[in-house]
Structure formats: structure tokens, C-alpha cells
Image 1 (tube, rainbow, N blue to C red):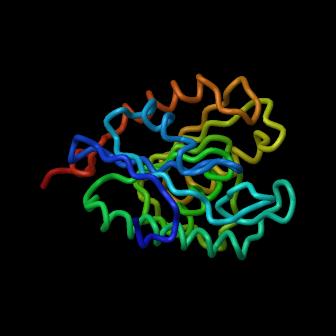
Image 2 (image 1 turned 45 degrees about the vertical axis):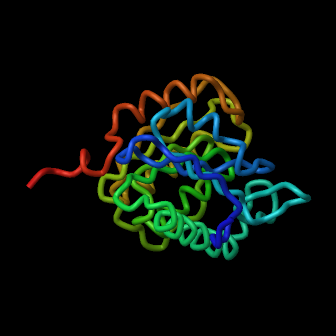
Length: 216
């Protein structure tokens, strides 16, 4: 039982300093959908996996859309803050203070993770975004201060074109993020190459906040 505003799963880590992967599913997924993916990406990580609070013809999503690729921007902003509040509440409830929170999102989950970076930049310490679009064009970019972000896009993706991926990368880089953009030989679907590349990328970054911060 939980008073947090998202149905979710939390899988603790045996390591007290391990990072926490915030698993954000695509349209039609749920809180169980990406748990195996999280374990493949970083077996030592804790997993926090919420279910989107919006239903589209019975399929869970994290925010509403008006049409394919056309987002309800007012709802996106509201749901982004709602998700950020959930993450901050979960950090307190599960005793995760001081841990690195890294979002791992696919499609709709990747889009709201990108929105989290732009609207609530202090919530995340990194992100792996599979097939992400530009959630919105920010009037003022936040300061992301070197937050590492991996964008893994599909060369033949009918929903997310190369120019869209490059625009998202540019926005995040302008905000100060350290962006890595990878193009897979695939469409919108998640592939084994996505998983392997993301696992290697995560392994190249610190698992704990203490390891990432310079010693005084």
C-alpha cells in the first residue's frame, strides 16, 4: 500500500549506494512492463516503475495526446509535475535520499522523461530515452549542469525522424546536458542493440552520486 499518486512497483537493491532506475513504459504498458529491461540494463540498480495515470482507449499513458505525435501540452505539463512529485515522494518513502535517479523511458515514457528534464531538472541525475520526441519547445531552457542523457533512436522509425531526435539533442545540450545520440538499424520497436548500447552507456557512468561528485 502507498499514498503515492501512481500505481507502481519498487524493487530494492542490495547495494545502498546503487542508482535507481525510474522505468517509464510506453503506451499500453504498466508498472511491470519494463522491470526485466531495468534488470538487464543494470542488475545492481533499484527499480522504481510507475504506471501512467492517463488512459487512451484503455491503454495507460503518462499524458494525453490530441493525435499521433500531437501532445496535449497543458496535460503534459501537469502530468510532468505530477510524476516529479511522485518521484520525490518515493525517494522519501523508500529511503532513497542521496541516490542517483536515472530515468529509462520508452516512447511515451521517454517523452515524459524528456519533459521532466526540462520542467523539473533537479529530479533526475541522468536519462536513457528510447525513441523520444521533443515534448515541447521550452521558452527558457533549464540548467542541467552536465546531466548525462542517452538518446537511442531508430533509423526507420515512422514516428520519430532524425531531425526530431537531433532537435531534442540540441535542446538538451543547450541546457547543459551531456548528450549521446545513437541511431539504431530499427523502427520504433525496442531492440537488443538498444539494450546492449544502453547497458554499456550506463556502465560508463557512476552508479552513486558520491562517485560522481568531486572530492573536497
